[in-house]
Image 1 (spheres, one colour):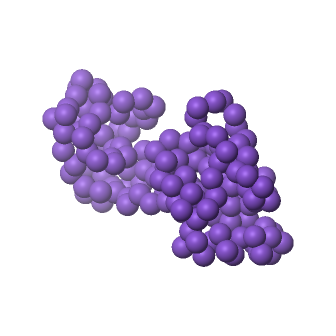
Image 2 (cartoon, rainbow, N blue to C red):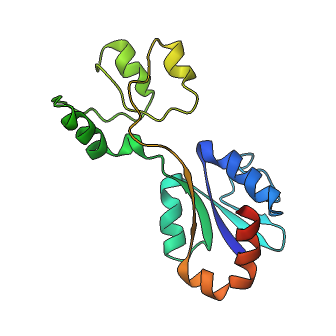
Length: 162
């Protein structure tokens, strides 16, 4: 049986669709209940995690594989600081956890750095994208030991996910 680290949030639906196309589905829809581990038939179980925790669970062997996003742009103040520094713009970075767009709209900040999927929220609030700091993409990560010890289970799945 494979243990799959499944991210919460915006990645969850497309990741579930990709696994379903490969023939692996959770028995229950994540998010409907508060279960953190959901069986996926006899072949897998899904561990529901915050995106940033997926690599740790896979690295430490609590999950055999998982999907995480390279989408932590708003959590990398150094990346943001470097972007402004390359342009010779002094900056005072303000870390926010909520609606980042509100900071610019309300006058708290002059600009924001945020993840943008469709740009709709920016548009509806009169904001525009000035530059792209990082292209967001999902990454499939596999535990090294599981890759060797569960190769007969993993390889067919990896080929289908391909």
